Image (cartoon, rainbow, N blue to C red):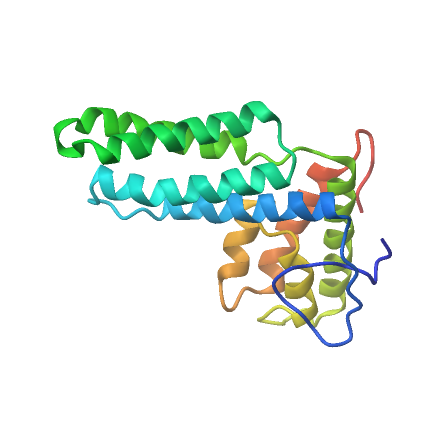
Length: 203
């Protein structure tokens, strides 16, 4: 992909040439996006909610993850774990949740752990190339912005939308309506360094 041909699913800006990735890479990007959304749903679970309410929401999230996992071609063992947990939660909800609260809490803990484990997107070469290209272009756009700018250039938001789910800190920053370039640049530099090849120097 050229630097001017960046695919992203959520945001658009007139003047950007958009070229979709291969179907396989697109499936991985959607997997990452779905995982990030699911993690947020778990993290945002309101204190005081009953375990049964939490698990009812969790069943829906597991179903979405299972569909995306199959589309992304994740290992069969991971897909089996998702479906097995979904079935066990559904069975617990059909029975008498109030009579077995301990079992429900264990299922919730297992759900949280599985979501974290499975949502670590594999470091595929094409995915790394995609992410590094977006990061590099976003940093160049930031460098051209005014040093005292208090909001992100629209082009930067469009580019970074394609990285949704890669890094929790980046996602949290982009959710702020008035995230400033000065806040974003060190986060992008860190992520770019983490994605660098062994021995490679990032400027």
